[in-house]
Length: 258
Image (tube, rainbow, N blue to C red; front, side):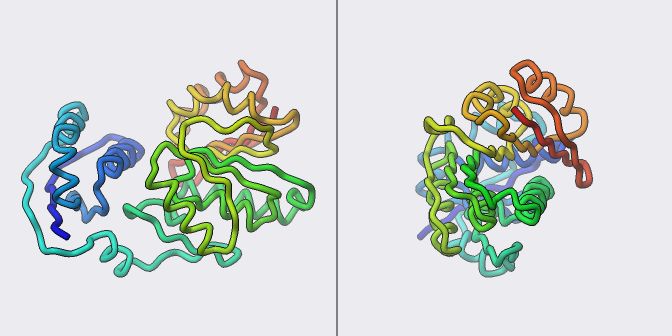
């Protein structure tokens, strides 16, 4: 299988901007990153060259240095072989596609910590229906199921994330209801987990509130301290009340209740 490497230069003011840009590259078919070198199957690059050019042109601080064909290697498999997959609490192990979402990023680890605390406090001793929005690798949904959630629905807009979530769920011996899309299926949830960028969280806040049971909780992560007022304002406007804030380094976590 022939691969190409795209040499890029990018500088962002905020970490989340780089995260979003690299996720956009993943959505175009890039499989792994080595610094600012991005690897992709040559045939996929040819199909998406115009979209890649548009992404680079429309993203401030990004420039394309060069593109070249490289050694015939599955670079995603190589990345996985060279990077130890993090083993999470309860024996959960995640194999991330595109080198994202093994569970060690601060935004994810705060969610995992909160799930473990909820388990210890007996939260999952009752029937609990959980929604993992923007599931990525499925790590949060899998952790919720391992903690004792009755059922977990996991949703993502990326078909590769859906595939990765299903693979990781099977590998960890749990069953998730995994959906492709940007909206959750009809239902009422006790707990919604959303580790996504601030703008998406604000936009989707009414949708989250609509699908929460009365007394249900919404846990948010993926943003900074300066984003909290915007999120709290959006939450309070639709009847979600702030319960708790946590932070790890610059990243923040919010717990809201309906």
